[in-house]
Image (cartoon, rainbow, N blue to C red; front, side, top):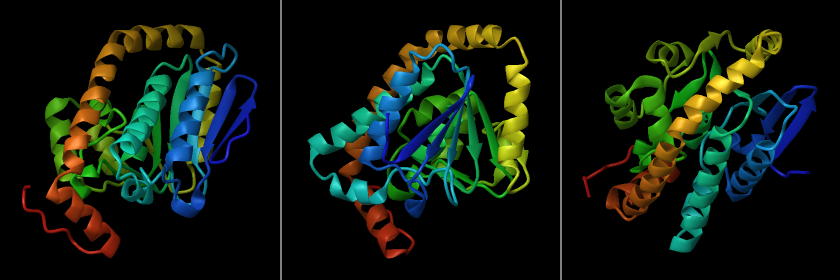
Length: 260
């Protein structure tokens, strides 16, 4: 299938999915969200591909959700449609019958960071800019961000990271357990190539069975988290703090939040 904002290439048992909106730092608009959801749902039926690598074209992995999309989705139904695509995308990704690897360089923020840490293995370059930074515009993580943060660092640390919204480099994220390996800038692709070769020469069917056991067990929780994120995000979008956060972002200034 031909896509507008992503590209899927295959080489025997390995597939590489590239996010292709480099002019927007691969920010996810409505088209990309739907294409990712469609692609992951189709890949669920793949029997030959055993590893999927996700990377971004240009200067970044993904800057997250497209701010222009947020500004334009003023109608509740439009917002529901966007969140539905996000839920479809993450549920399908979580159930993929293959090892998933995020190859991160540049920014991986917001929804882009949720997708990265949902992967089985996250490789980040040392000067990557990693952030669960929804708090900066008065929102909560979506795309299962709460679920995947808890999976990686536990509830107490996840709350602190989400509330702070700090931009981390590769080493900082590694020390927290949010990524699994850090490499020098420009070397992520080389590392991923070596790592995929190692996995493909391993008893990968046994690895995939382990993944299925864990993910099948936790799927109902992910579903519940996605539903709660939708409900909470609707509430947050109606707050004065969110409107101030968006306005400050567009005007490139520090927001003045008032707790309302």
